[in-house]
Image 1 (cartoon, rainbow, N blue to C red):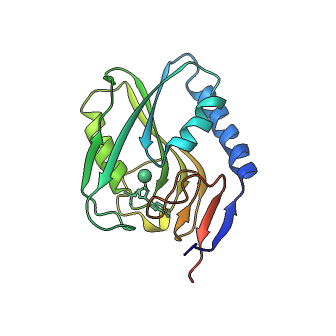
Image 2 (cartoon, rainbow, N blue to C red):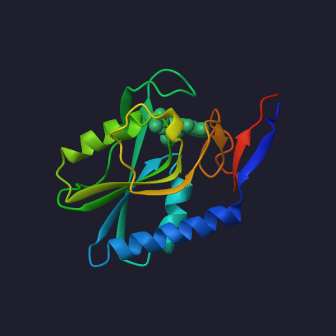
Image 3 (spheres, rainbow, N blue to C red):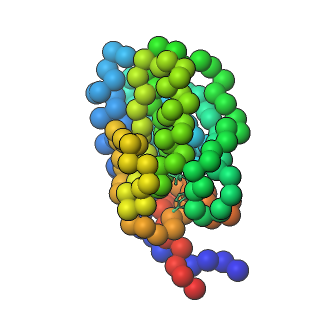
Length: 175
Ligand code: IMP
Ligand code: MG
Protein backbone atom coordinates (compact mmCIF):
# COMPACT_ATOMS: atom_id res chain seq x y z
CA UNK A 1 0.00 0.00 0.00
CA UNK A 2 2.90 2.36 0.65
CA UNK A 3 3.87 4.64 -2.22
CA UNK A 4 7.46 4.84 -3.37
CA UNK A 5 8.80 8.30 -2.62
CA UNK A 6 11.96 9.75 -4.16
CA UNK A 7 13.70 12.59 -2.32
CA UNK A 8 13.66 15.84 -4.27
CA UNK A 9 14.91 18.20 -1.55
CA UNK A 10 16.51 17.08 1.70
CA UNK A 11 15.67 18.48 5.12
CA UNK A 12 19.05 20.28 5.13
CA UNK A 13 18.46 21.88 1.73
CA UNK A 14 15.05 23.13 2.84
CA UNK A 15 16.47 24.49 6.12
CA UNK A 16 19.29 26.32 4.32
CA UNK A 17 16.97 27.92 1.77
CA UNK A 18 14.39 28.80 4.43
CA UNK A 19 17.14 30.64 6.34
CA UNK A 20 18.05 32.66 3.21
CA UNK A 21 14.42 33.61 2.57
CA UNK A 22 13.89 34.54 6.24
CA UNK A 23 16.93 36.82 6.08
CA UNK A 24 15.61 38.50 2.92
CA UNK A 25 12.21 39.02 4.55
CA UNK A 26 13.85 40.43 7.72
CA UNK A 27 15.80 42.94 5.59
CA UNK A 28 12.87 43.91 3.36
CA UNK A 29 10.44 44.51 6.22
CA UNK A 30 12.92 46.13 8.62
CA UNK A 31 11.06 48.73 10.72
CA UNK A 32 7.64 47.47 9.58
CA UNK A 33 5.82 44.96 11.79
CA UNK A 34 5.04 41.96 9.60
CA UNK A 35 1.83 39.94 9.73
CA UNK A 36 2.27 36.36 8.50
CA UNK A 37 -0.78 34.49 7.25
CA UNK A 38 -0.28 30.75 7.17
CA UNK A 39 -2.47 28.81 4.76
CA UNK A 40 -3.54 25.59 6.47
CA UNK A 41 -2.91 22.79 6.44
CA UNK A 42 -0.04 22.48 3.99
CA UNK A 43 1.66 25.77 4.83
CA UNK A 44 2.03 25.08 8.54
CA UNK A 45 5.37 23.24 8.50
CA UNK A 46 7.07 25.84 6.32
CA UNK A 47 5.50 28.76 8.19
CA UNK A 48 6.91 27.56 11.53
CA UNK A 49 10.40 27.03 10.15
CA UNK A 50 10.32 30.40 8.37
CA UNK A 51 8.91 32.33 11.34
CA UNK A 52 11.60 30.97 13.70
CA UNK A 53 14.30 32.39 11.43
CA UNK A 54 12.77 35.85 10.88
CA UNK A 55 14.59 38.36 13.09
CA UNK A 56 12.08 41.26 13.03
CA UNK A 57 8.84 41.43 15.07
CA UNK A 58 6.00 39.43 13.53
CA UNK A 59 2.43 38.49 14.30
CA UNK A 60 0.69 35.43 12.84
CA UNK A 61 -2.75 34.33 11.79
CA UNK A 62 -4.11 31.23 10.08
CA UNK A 63 -6.60 30.61 7.34
CA UNK A 64 -7.89 27.42 5.80
CA UNK A 65 -9.24 27.18 2.27
CA UNK A 66 -10.30 24.28 0.14
CA UNK A 67 -11.10 23.92 -3.51
CA UNK A 68 -14.26 22.11 -4.46
CA UNK A 69 -14.11 19.08 -6.71
CA UNK A 70 -11.11 17.22 -8.09
CA UNK A 71 -8.53 15.79 -5.75
CA UNK A 72 -5.12 16.43 -7.25
CA UNK A 73 -6.21 19.18 -9.65
CA UNK A 74 -7.47 22.48 -8.30
CA UNK A 75 -10.97 23.39 -9.54
CA UNK A 76 -10.65 27.15 -9.33
CA UNK A 77 -13.58 27.45 -6.94
CA UNK A 78 -12.30 28.16 -3.46
CA UNK A 79 -14.13 27.99 -0.15
CA UNK A 80 -12.94 29.62 3.09
CA UNK A 81 -13.07 26.83 5.68
CA UNK A 82 -11.51 28.88 8.48
CA UNK A 83 -11.21 32.64 8.26
CA UNK A 84 -8.60 34.85 9.94
CA UNK A 85 -9.07 35.65 13.64
CA UNK A 86 -7.97 39.28 13.33
CA UNK A 87 -8.51 42.17 10.89
CA UNK A 88 -5.65 42.95 8.50
CA UNK A 89 -6.51 46.59 7.78
CA UNK A 90 -3.33 48.66 7.44
CA UNK A 91 -1.05 45.68 8.10
CA UNK A 92 1.90 44.50 6.02
CA UNK A 93 0.68 41.02 5.17
CA UNK A 94 2.76 38.12 3.91
CA UNK A 95 0.80 35.03 2.87
CA UNK A 96 2.78 31.81 3.40
CA UNK A 97 1.86 28.80 1.24
CA UNK A 98 3.26 25.33 0.68
CA UNK A 99 2.93 25.28 -3.11
CA UNK A 100 1.55 27.40 -5.91
CA UNK A 101 0.33 25.25 -8.73
CA UNK A 102 -2.44 26.60 -10.99
CA UNK A 103 -2.56 29.76 -8.86
CA UNK A 104 -6.33 29.43 -8.48
CA UNK A 105 -6.28 29.29 -4.67
CA UNK A 106 -4.00 32.28 -4.27
CA UNK A 107 -5.58 34.51 -6.91
CA UNK A 108 -8.94 34.07 -5.18
CA UNK A 109 -7.49 34.55 -1.70
CA UNK A 110 -5.56 37.70 -2.61
CA UNK A 111 -8.71 39.25 -4.08
CA UNK A 112 -10.65 38.48 -0.89
CA UNK A 113 -7.93 39.82 1.40
CA UNK A 114 -7.32 42.98 -0.65
CA UNK A 115 -10.91 43.98 0.05
CA UNK A 116 -9.99 44.16 3.75
CA UNK A 117 -7.53 46.99 3.00
CA UNK A 118 -4.17 45.65 4.20
CA UNK A 119 -1.24 48.12 4.07
CA UNK A 120 0.45 45.71 1.66
CA UNK A 121 0.02 42.10 0.64
CA UNK A 122 2.73 39.78 -0.71
CA UNK A 123 3.25 36.08 -1.21
CA UNK A 124 5.89 33.64 0.06
CA UNK A 125 5.87 30.01 -1.04
CA UNK A 126 7.96 26.98 -0.26
CA UNK A 127 7.42 25.55 -3.75
CA UNK A 128 6.38 26.95 -7.10
CA UNK A 129 5.26 24.76 -10.00
CA UNK A 130 5.15 27.41 -12.76
CA UNK A 131 4.48 24.98 -15.63
CA UNK A 132 0.97 24.47 -14.28
CA UNK A 133 0.05 28.12 -13.79
CA UNK A 134 -3.35 29.23 -15.08
CA UNK A 135 -3.63 32.47 -13.09
CA UNK A 136 -0.57 34.35 -14.34
CA UNK A 137 -1.54 37.47 -12.39
CA UNK A 138 -0.38 35.78 -9.16
CA UNK A 139 3.00 37.36 -8.38
CA UNK A 140 5.19 35.58 -5.85
CA UNK A 141 7.66 37.76 -3.92
CA UNK A 142 9.58 34.93 -2.21
CA UNK A 143 10.00 31.41 -3.63
CA UNK A 144 12.19 28.81 -1.92
CA UNK A 145 12.25 26.30 -4.78
CA UNK A 146 10.85 25.94 -8.28
CA UNK A 147 9.74 22.35 -8.86
CA UNK A 148 8.86 20.26 -11.93
CA UNK A 149 5.31 19.24 -12.82
CA UNK A 150 5.21 16.15 -10.60
CA UNK A 151 3.15 15.24 -7.56
CA UNK A 152 5.06 16.42 -4.51
CA UNK A 153 4.65 15.31 -0.89
CA UNK A 154 6.23 16.02 2.46
CA UNK A 155 6.98 19.14 4.51
CA UNK A 156 3.24 19.86 4.75
CA UNK A 157 2.22 18.61 1.31
CA UNK A 158 -0.12 15.64 1.28
CA UNK A 159 -1.42 12.90 -0.94
CA UNK A 160 -4.91 12.07 0.35
CA UNK A 161 -3.91 13.61 3.70
CA UNK A 162 -0.82 11.41 4.07
CA UNK A 163 2.89 12.27 4.09
CA UNK A 164 2.53 15.82 5.45
CA UNK A 165 4.96 14.93 8.24
CA UNK A 166 7.85 13.81 6.02
CA UNK A 167 10.79 16.02 7.04
CA UNK A 168 11.97 16.22 3.41
CA UNK A 169 10.26 16.99 0.07
CA UNK A 170 9.65 14.01 -2.21
CA UNK A 171 8.03 12.91 -5.44
CA UNK A 172 5.62 9.97 -5.53
CA UNK A 173 6.98 7.53 -8.12
CA UNK A 174 4.56 5.93 -10.55
CA UNK A 175 4.12 2.27 -9.59
P1 IMP B 1 -3.50 25.83 -6.90
O1 IMP B 1 -4.77 26.50 -6.49
O2 IMP B 1 -3.65 25.00 -8.14
O3 IMP B 1 -2.31 26.77 -7.00
O4 IMP B 1 -3.20 24.73 -5.83
C1 IMP B 1 -2.69 24.99 -4.62
C2 IMP B 1 -2.95 23.83 -3.67
O5 IMP B 1 -3.03 22.56 -4.34
C3 IMP B 1 -1.80 23.72 -2.73
O6 IMP B 1 -1.99 24.56 -1.61
C4 IMP B 1 -1.79 22.26 -2.40
O7 IMP B 1 -2.66 22.00 -1.32
C5 IMP B 1 -2.33 21.57 -3.63
N1 IMP B 1 -1.24 21.02 -4.47
C6 IMP B 1 -0.84 21.47 -5.68
N2 IMP B 1 0.16 20.74 -6.18
C7 IMP B 1 0.43 19.79 -5.25
C8 IMP B 1 1.42 18.72 -5.16
O8 IMP B 1 2.25 18.49 -6.04
N3 IMP B 1 1.37 17.96 -4.03
C9 IMP B 1 0.48 18.19 -3.02
N4 IMP B 1 -0.44 19.18 -3.05
C10 IMP B 1 -0.47 19.97 -4.15
MG1 MG C 1 -2.56 23.78 0.35
